[in-house]
Image (cartoon, rainbow, N blue to C red; front, side, top):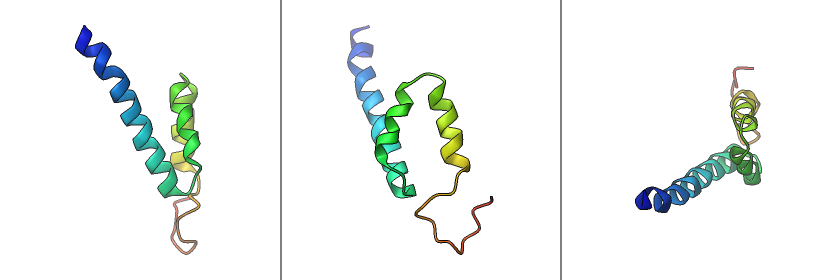
Length: 65
């Protein structure tokens, strides 16, 4: 149990860091990553980001919208 309590914050911070990097590369503000900490809203926001137009993509690329 001690190992779990030690590794859980490390895993959560790692996931937040990954989300931050992905959002920054997509052109969104990385602070949106904090939404991952809110239950239910995190699932909704993953869908919103997945299907919205990403600001960093070139305009001539079909974004599937």
